[in-house]
Length: 418
Image (cartoon, rainbow, N blue to C red; front, side):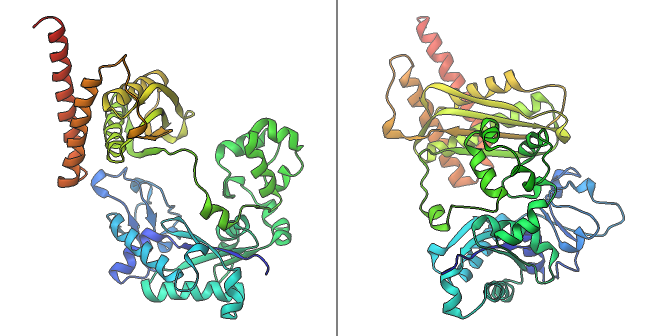
């Protein structure tokens, strides 16, 4: 049985879902998914294919849409998008086993199609068409597909080849890949190659995958470390990882992260307030899962990529789920590394190396009674969120900080004999 993988994507998913809910054709309707209550700097999560014909790109800002174009602004409805995505996943599993479908994102899946071609007596393209037609019939959403002899080729066939064929189904094997995609530019169109990797390859005069095949492997390993193996394989159209490998993968470590795109340029002081809010939200999630962390990381991206992102990571002295400790560490890292010369447009934080609460050990060098009281406050904040919604977390954070401050003053006063 020859390997056959498919990567199926829902075209302009959020915008298409909004059109389907309104009984509109996304190929004839100018619609953008954005929260216009944030002003003209609001990020557009998706635009319809009709609007993209005017040169409007996904992930643009509202003010970047050319004047004179009439369009509908649809406020994001993530719960609806998730429900539709779950329904579409159910459509796929009517035809293939759960073990042979891997949801890569809310609008994209990998499918191991090889075991089912003979069962349904269809070619790979016919099988893809059957799935795409069923999605359209039940949801009104258009799908596109890539077909390849491995998962990498299926993804690249979707991202690059499918855009240039009438039926929106790209097909690649290693031979057709070498004849076409291996010379494709820019490199950042290729799955897994970001701007940083592309810039480093440019130092070698390399601007496509074919160029990578001419670089000595020793040089690639020296520059990219173990990631060089992936670059080398993909440059030749190879991918040893199977869908079964992906399904069976279990991470050795766990982490939590929170990332926020800002709808306008933020000063360092204003961004610090957002950082504290994000820290409170992520710490409450840590408490909900009864876990501790000993590793924090921070990512700051600046306006229009005028300067390189900053941030970094830091190990803490002990495992903790304390908001005050984590906030102090993240704000300290932020103060040390963040530039003041350019507006801030993205903040990302993460807690790594998580362990469960019962793995935590008490320390003789910290006030464990104080931390226990703070943790009780954090559990109260979590309860507030569950009862009154996510937005109540910010108010809960304020109460938490006030109470922690009062508790600190009481402890200091007690040591002074008051």
